[in-house]
Each structure stands twice: as C-alpha cells, then as structure tokens.
Image (tube, rainbow, N blue to C red; front, side, top):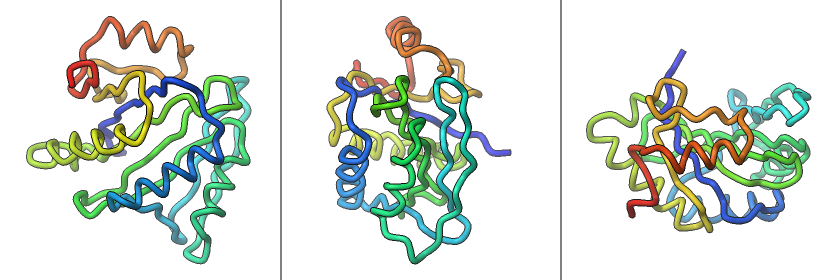
Length: 177
C-alpha cells in the first residue's frame, strides 16, 4: 500500500460538475497535467453523502477526455481521475469533492509520497500553486493525508473541515502566500 501526500483545495463557491471539470481539464493541459486513459486506469467514484457506492469503471485508450469527464459527472458523489505530469514519476490523483451530491465544492490532489520528498517537494508545491491559480479558492492546504500530523477527514462535514483548517497549520497553506 502506498502513502500519498494530499493537498485539499476548497473552492470559494460551489460549481456545476460538467463545466467545471471540463474547463479545469483544459487548463491542466496547458501545464502538462494530462488525463490518463488506458486499460489499467479507472474512474474511482466517491461514496455519496448517504453512503451509496458505485463500482469503479475501467477506461481504455480510445476514450476521449469528454467521455471520461461525462463518466465522473454521471455519479452524484463524483470521484477521482488519474493524471500524469512529466515532472513526477508516479500518477497524480485529482478527486472532485462534494458535500451536497450536486456541486463540486473542493478538489483533493494526491501525489505518491515517493514523489514529494527531497527535490520533488519543491515541484509538488509549484504544481499545486499553478493549479490553484486556475481556481477561485477559499483555502489550499496540504499535507493532509491519513499519515500526516495535520490529517483532515473528508468524511466530516464541510463546516468541521473549515473549522479544522482555521485552527491548524499545514506544509502548504495559501493563507501564507
């Protein structure tokens, strides 16, 4: 099992999934963060707030970005897509988060921990800053993964998450930019 360095981006305003993800995907391409589509990639769906689950769907190389985005938007709990960037050895996970099963309210970006130590830590921070510049963010905080001292459970209510953020410090924190 791998550990991940996770950064949470809380949006100032909730967004409609399809136009938001489509637009973000286009902007990510400009910084060489590309959606992965192959026989070993999948769309991993989040549980809904009432704990409904959906099985992952395996992708294939013939799918367009639009088809993949349609898949993730077809589930009210949204989910995670896999991206690649040449500055990192491993995949980057981008999970689209909702607390009302209707709108995107945040994004979780996950890097393999092996990609975020030593010299890669600077590239991790640089990429997070570039991505956050595409968004109207309330907070950008990381490292918040389950092995971090500043762990945030995304199962909590959005109000509890905001309260936790306001009382904590993080290795990546937009409040200090």
